Image (tube, rainbow, N blue to C red; front, side, top):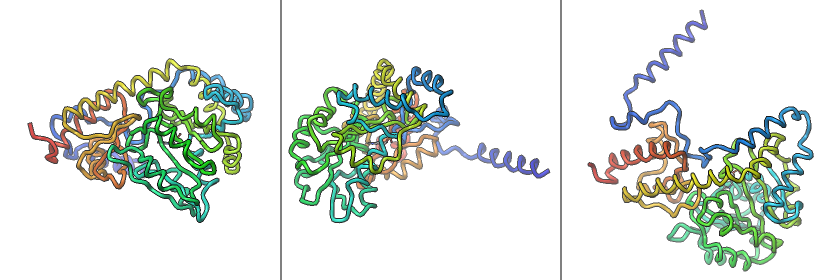
Length: 373
Ligand SMILES: Cc1ncc(COP(=O)(O)O)c(C=O)c1O
């Protein structure tokens, strides 16, 4: 009886939701779907390597064992990729733990770190929580890292500089030649942390932009990479840090352990499947261009997009826009203070982005941000 009543209530609730007046305009009705479009967390909508799936299935039966040889194989593959010896690599569940270990290892009262605002906050929040001071340097007019201002902010208590290249949430890049010169000018006792989560999809990719060359020749540069973005493996949680072993030794004090067996073998297989990663990179670049072409048509301002998302000057409060999009089942990125009328939108599939762009155009019209047809 109780079950029947619950079923009835459930039916009524679902029914009433279905009959709610739509919040979207008539011409968008086709685009309303039951599954939300997630373009908020910079996840990869194109999917990950089939070879990684096969590797996980093959490893399934060994789930009773710790990843022993598998862990070593991954470290060796990463060391080969970065052209360093294996004691320069620290593998973690996602790259987030590398950021957190750096905060834990370097933050203390009386010490400070330098980064930009708006920027990616995972390291800085923990640095502050541990009693360190964070000096936030505003981005320049092109929404890029202002290297001279960052240089000027260094003092005798600075222990760390965090640079996200390309930057999250703006997606902008510093010129790699200028960044290299900046890193080399930083005093040796200060750790420079370069987060290259998105660098593969920047113009010129890894080859032109990565700071791995400076890492190899320095004792104070830490680089983080992730399998969550171009590799499309966010749910599998794999990332790593590359640095001189003396830097990694400091981080290891706070090491919470490696990723699990399945993620480990998946990462090794994904590394070898370069055709799939190249495909994902090309899709990101192709769909990103479709988005920026349409933004150009609409006359919208946006930051130079070098990552897997676009940062758009919408002129609408970012929280309000998020809600209006959510009402259309489209989930976009968080507000990025102090740039409160800019929105960060991740690149999804072409179909998803067309739906987003149509909804965005109709919201802009409703708000008088662009002309009514
Ligand atoms: C710049 C940047 N660094 C690091 C991360 C952490 O990602 P993950 O832990 O999945 O590697 C993210 C996640 O979005 C990010 O945007």
